[in-house]
Image (tube, rainbow, N blue to C red; front, side, top):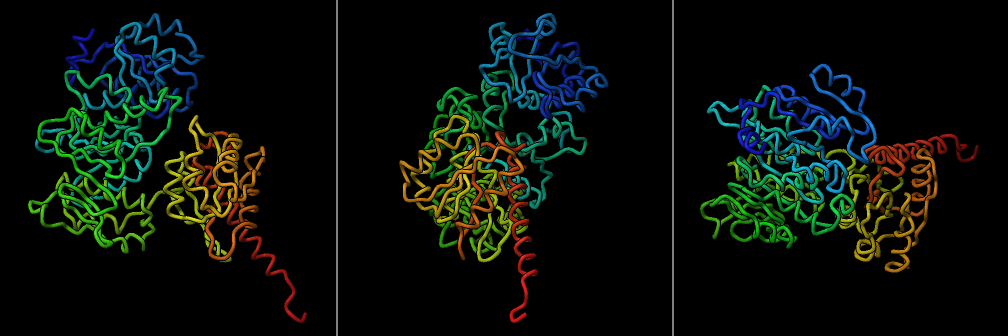
Length: 511
């Protein structure tokens, strides 16, 4: 079977009749099934839960569907005898169907591999497919992807942010409008699948790539930190022009040093310190490029100032680092410094990313619900030292004690939520015993944030910040990190409105 798959390296190759099992029916799974059906393959989607919208569409596109428990291989899948399995990112390496495919010798792909193979469906005027820029990291992926795409667009290129950011890369590849560049956010899950295909007939070969940072996350999915790290490192494989790495994160430098890249690809560092040649960095409050100019040993190009970014809420250190990484990727595609500055001056962070939701009675309320792991929360706490810290949720097997030891000591107080409160409280007792810690044990989602805001308001004083940076996933009590942030903001606004009503109802002096 490998011979036929080896020949399937373009949209116009003969995919007809190829039996493909698609694991999962989320946004990614449906994009895979839809693409394969359009190519003429015979498709069976296998999933535990079927989104009603997608399940109604599968018969329309000519794909089959099996819904049911997947703790063992369904008879329908076994009798289908797939020649290829394409798995959605939620299927971990230890999942029974993934292990079955590997044991049976059935080739196992993810959506990134399929998208790369059919990337020539819509081409540029010169007949070539869009370049790819690939972005990963424990934190900052989505912001950097959006920044990069914005810089490219301001620079005159047709660019699409896609992948793990929410728009499947296969949808971008098939968009009839066509693009010059696809800015592809890739998760460690997608990169794990891609790692099995890097020596094939047409391996993914991005124009530029970056791993923004590395910290423990998704350990249950990968099985170990080492496996997680190795998956992230795949982003640099076969890079053609620029491997961008974080000078403050030695792990990313090591990834680049070990990467098997196309001859001529350059290592480009970014960081908040003074850059060397082939780096981007900060000099006296100015973001500068010393990588993409001929006189880089003696000169630098100004991109933007920290003051400019501060006016737009983009001056937190980790956001500045994201901007420098995005600028390095954009400069590798010859976007001008002026276009990068204009892009940053018009950029806004997504909701729930260090978002100021209110300022009242001298207290600033900040929603960074997107800080779903300790590494992200550390960046938030660095931006707001001394905050009343709202922390907790599902820890995903990650030890939070290092974060509490490094950042928790400077917190004014901690309000702890979620099902994994015990290890957080224990970490404070061990590493920051002087910090007041209050647990919120409300079981109902509707009650949690109202209680959090009430307690935080009692702890915070004039000039203080209340920071929602949970360092944990949200699914124990909320539908998503966005739901968690929205409920936090709503509770803050209710409290402020109720306070205003109370003042209005008070009798006037002397009445």
